[in-house]
Length: 392
Image 1 (cartoon, helix red, strand yellow):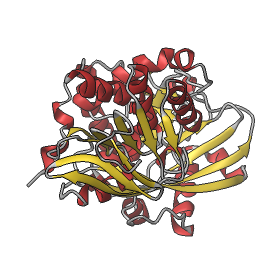
Image 2 (cartoon, rainbow, N blue to C red):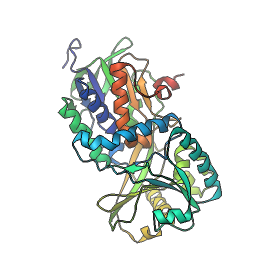
Image 3 (cartoon, rainbow, N blue to C red):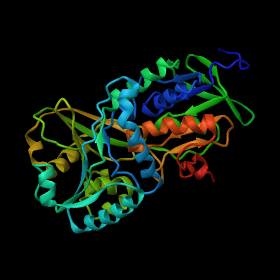
Image 4 (cartoon, rainbow, N blue to C red):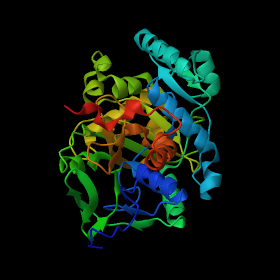
């Protein structure tokens, strides 16, 4: 519609990944007329190139972990609510520790996580072996939490989209948002590859592409794409009992400087172990954390190091066939927290920058965004996620 005096919707959501579709679902569930615009298709971005982990242990202690714990509560009933299979399984999870330096780092992390409400402990190598046979005996222990889980990220994305559509959301795939239409300091609509659309509220849930839209409005949104390369094996007999990370994964994610004493390629590519097995038997493992702009192609160097790293923890992987590799771009922020809230431009709302936590945080993000837009408040403190915190 081209008449700016007539709104096409109450809310326009930009981005059709798990964050955008969760927001559309929650807003439409509460009666808002929503239009969702997606440049390509669902699960074409980070949502379709991610692992299946819903790990509480990987979240920063404090507001980040507190938000993730609220999301976990929602996951337990989400499949029933959406009426679609998302394959959520709460199986517990481990973070493997190789040496005393990693042990000291993880002890400090665990103590802070406990204060935020996470059920997590350091366990011995003997306890690791009981929980997950087949792990290299070169590790010295692990952290373990029974609260960790897994979900099918693509099924989750599609389920949110179907739920939003059932609630009346208009979903337009193959629709690129080229510009934000403004009047003064107010956003009133979007210009797309299929015309102009107007709404009093515009939500930027475009993941790694979100800062490009912000630039058009003169907003500083320091979201950078960080590439993760992942391997997927052929279907094998089930033997991975829970999602597993390594302490190096935690360092690469939260403080890469801690990897300075690691082997050169580990530090260069930000490599850490993230491993799980799908219900069909495929093992998915990675990953790198690389700043290479918007290049999501896999590399021989990256995949080779991912495989070498994974085999040091699970030697049996060397005898398995890898049937697929993939690269995805995660929306990184300098403090590791997403940008969620109103911007300085009236009517323009941010919900992006979740990096590798979008799958775990998708349910709660949709809820808090709907609350903030409709009620002006929500049930958790969101001040730490203020998108204006980086403004000069």
